[in-house]
Image 1 (cartoon, helix red, strand yellow):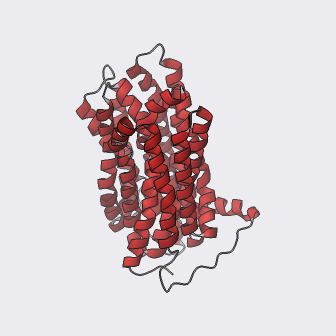
Image 2: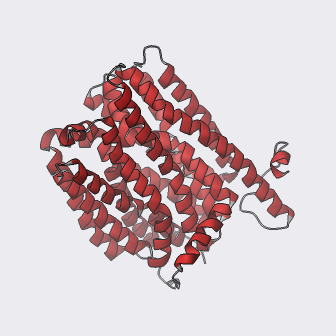
Image 3: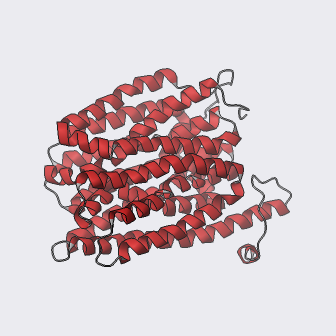
Length: 440
């Protein structure tokens, strides 16, 4: 049974757990400002450099459904503890790596640990906070995770410049690994006085059926495409290609490029709680907000790729990156949809399914951008090379927007069908003329 109020213990447990997510965002995005140093350290070009992110984020995406099952089976406390240990181990390996294969192995370990954080934090929020607070806590978690992203911009650049690669990443790795003890000590699965849920192992043959049931739910599918479309571009810029683009194509210094990248984080930190409050109070506004963002994002990419000469004024870059950054908090709509329209026993699995969307898109664009740059950089100036490479991002945005519209209409049709059967629905929608065609 859901709790009816948020206690001090709930906030303490949440804050302890969300610190792991902050660390995860730092580790995930740390290569963003260290990408040029990584290229020199491992003597690799753009395609091989992109493989670091492709591997890490690809494993993250592949681990989302297994993570949901692990959380259902072993609980978020154990999964978060393992996540902190894995991320710490991976970052220590990365600090000491001097060969490309070892570096890849380190990022793989990091990706697996990172993949285990977000679903665990959401499960703890669902257990310790009342439903009306869930959207706010979720968006606040994402915003605070942005602090890890922020540390991975200007502060990490300065630390790399002053103490070097090895010391910087050793500090980060050992600090995260040690924090696993705090998680094991302070985090509790359920509030005091609430019985521990009885967990029944899911047979392997039933796993596929559970995932299939989640995927069949139209709102899960809609959540997948919302996440795919809204968070992939700003995350791709922050994770890997934003920093090289700003330095090589836009001619900014390392410090200035880090400052522009920090806009992605600052906007997310501010916009997240605001959107969470608005969406929590007016859930019917969720999809109009998504649609508005997608339209703005298309305009932003039109400016980035169509600017005469390819080199934009720095103030324009700040504005465009700030607008694109709203995609990160907007992507939280995906998880609100999943929570509202899936039964509790499969919410974690459905959350994992939706979370795959954005990271599958990032994996694709990170790889394609690196390959295109490898092919064209020798005979095309950097601004034009990045223009060609970033066409893959635009393609993802267009495909994702199309599928979002399709499943938005189908999800609405499912809600109206449930209302017609006399069933209660989480959000009552107003029928529009175009809904007739979706229901037909």
